Each structure stands twice: as C-alpha cells, then as structure tokens.
Image 1 (cartoon, one colour):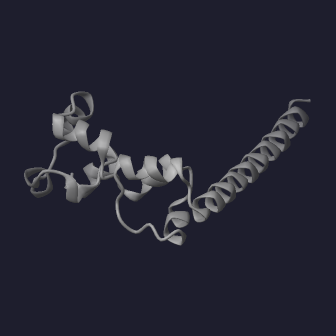
Image 2 (tube, rainbow, N blue to C red; image 1 turned 180 degrees about the vertical axis):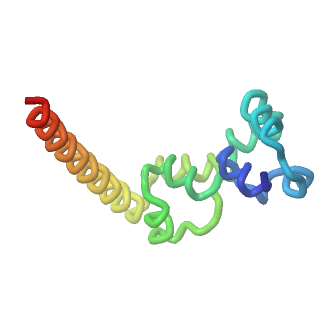
Length: 126
C-alpha cells in the first residue's frame, strides 16, 4: 500500500511520519504489524500529533467542513486541540452545535426508516 493510504488508515499525519515510512511501500502484513505493535514513533504521533484533519474534527466534535469554516487548515497537535476545547472560540461553539444538530437529524431519519421497514416486515409476514 502507498504510505498515504497507510497513514490515513492509521489516523496519522503523513508529513510528521519518519522519512523512511513516507518513502516506502507497506505490505498488508507490515500494516497489520503496525496496528498490532505500533513502534514508538507511531505511538507518539497518535498521542501528541500533529493529527490529520479527520482526527482533529473528531476530537473537536465538528465536521471537517466545520474546521475549514473555522479557519483550521493545518494539522493540530494534541496540546492545540486541548487548548481549543478549554477555551472554545465562537466558531467552535457554533460548529459543535451545528454538528450535533446534523447528527440528531440523521439519527431521526435512520430511526424513522427503521420503523417503516419494521412495519413493512410485519405486513409481509402476515
């Protein structure tokens, strides 16, 4: 696999990885070994960052688009994420609220679809 693919699957920021990782092709066996027994550099990246945007968005509980609207274009470290959470700027408060609303609506739609499917299944079972 390409290093970018492996970095995405591992949830790490590729430019922060060691150069030999960035320049190599990783087999599925090597990938499985990285997941099962992460080397110190991988554990350190996961612990302290910098983290890629999907991880930052998840930790801040916003969407990736919300990060962009908030002006966050670069990878953030764990310390920077913690600082944002401790003293959230207005854009973060707004985006977290928006994200929560979107997730609630998605859950409502999913629940409604499940109810309709259950009703349809009961009708067909008769």
